[in-house]
Length: 455
Image 1 (cartoon, rainbow, N blue to C red):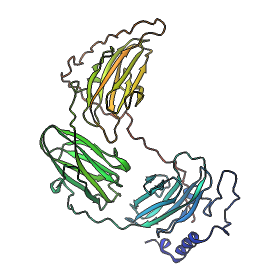
Image 2 (spheres, rainbow, N blue to C red; image 1 turned 120 degrees about the vertical axis):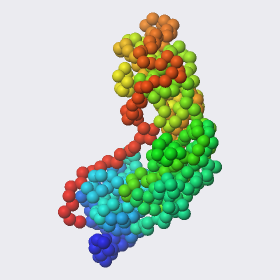
Image 3 (cartoon, one colour; image 1 turned 45 degrees about the vertical axis):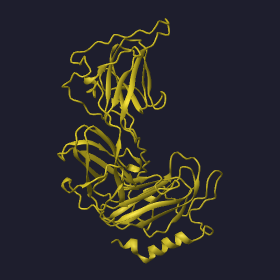
Image 4 (cartoon, helix red, strand yellow; image 1 turned 90 degrees about the horizontal axis):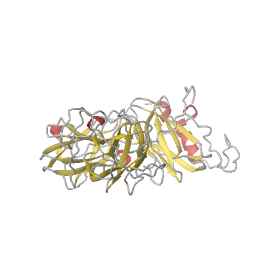
């Protein structure tokens, strides 16, 4: 164990720095300017090379964001396996990021798990070293804020839950299908929890984790090996949601693991299975790629479709002449995302989330070159990642110069494209890596970290 963490002198300095009144502190304190607060006694601490120690003894350091762009850095010396809880208190909306010993690699981050805009991170040190913590205001604030407090405390390892051992599919315990929350923990790095769910044919369930743990949820078939669905963070605070329609009765397997298996532990989370209306594939499936796209008539007539699984994609093809003006839109009770893709089947030319009524999408497009274009619809995601029924429509608009009536563009059927909705295709489905995710990630601003020669 590192001597610097437990030395009496270091402990005394931390306590005195916490308890001393503001008056009389003159080190690094400049007169306040208009629109700013007085810098705290830890300034300058705007990067990892200027970080001050934060001892994990539960005592808060009183600080300020003396300008809107001020950031504060601290460091902790930890042994391998040490678990600490770092939190802020006060009226400032804070973003807290834990960095690796290089001062650049983000290991954990939180915005408001501490309540009232405060941040809280629980972190387990993978190796014995010095770790850095950056505290800043959340968002793009231009106003100072303070005072606020930052503190750290050691956290004991969580105890194994009552369902252990359940680290393999053979040891899986039954999960009720009535929505009951089953409480578990990730009591050690690498711990995984398996449960079983027994279902009837043509039923659907919402499988979800809840709590403050960043989980990955994976559904396997009755053979325990075939992966049917997986989700990382469709829920809140890194929790997971899978909505799945089971077409065959049987016992299925659900695995829960921490997002970072090497370091993450979790004191408590819940997993549940709740019955929801089933969602079945529509008559146009399979249509998950450009090669499988079916023609969309541009006459305004709706195509009845569904998004029967969270990663379902509905592709349609549209032949357009240069100068054509078209309108594409979705309708119905589903939250849809609509893309227009170029003739190469990869380049996204337009995209829209909810310009239509409620959560529906609308796109206008006028190509410069003739060719076979594609439209793609996917579920937006979140807590309702499937869609029982929605309508996709397209319409050719009149030319603004001639005022002509809408004309339906001819849509040729290319070689290898099925002409009937249920005709199968042997074309493999490419990956979906070119499409954005439903929940954008806000990357932290990383300051360069020169080597710290002294403390």
